Length: 266
Image 1 (cartoon, rainbow, N blue to C red):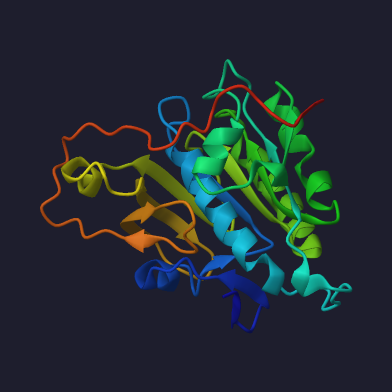
Image 2: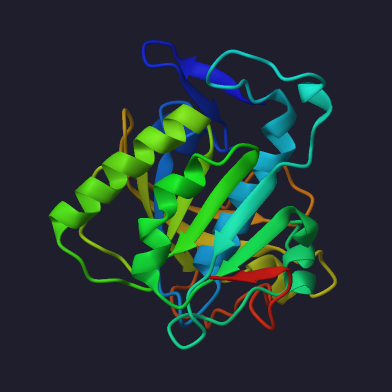
């Protein structure tokens, strides 16, 4: 479940199910904060897939997430309809548009998503703090297309977005190529990894496997691990990397990008 494990600053944290990773995160992923998830967006779906896993866990824990203003809306524990806004990269700059069947296969109900389609990454980021202040959102995902900006630009953007996220309690994820930026609650790099269990037994349930590098975590420490995820899970699972071959070809586990659905163009 969601637990407040960092009493001096009031952060609400969502354990990810791997003890070593949760310790590196000082108790779990901090909700109502802004997280940077980076990787090779145009080559594979690892970054998007890991984001979907986090969103699935977040929605599972959402009914017990305590509002930041300590006021519980009527029937709040029974609500499971909070919206996720996803602002994908342009088709020419990213991996394509989100696909409903792929999202469902990965465990995320596409009905909970509002896809905001705009070709300009600068406009997406400029709207981030306003989107975060919108009531009733579970999370906001913005792909920044590897936008090249100064460190000062990212610092100002992060500061505004962090304040908005803290006020609303909405968690934000920024997705794109690695950038030299600080100020985010956490900064990750995600790469696809081979699923040896499926290669030895194709009848096994489909899993996604990723190599995670947690570069920075506020109040925590860097960490690396190989994890797996499958639809319907409520946590990640660690994979023992003993005897793993580093040269095996890796394929994306889920086709999550294809023709768009429920899209709002701006």
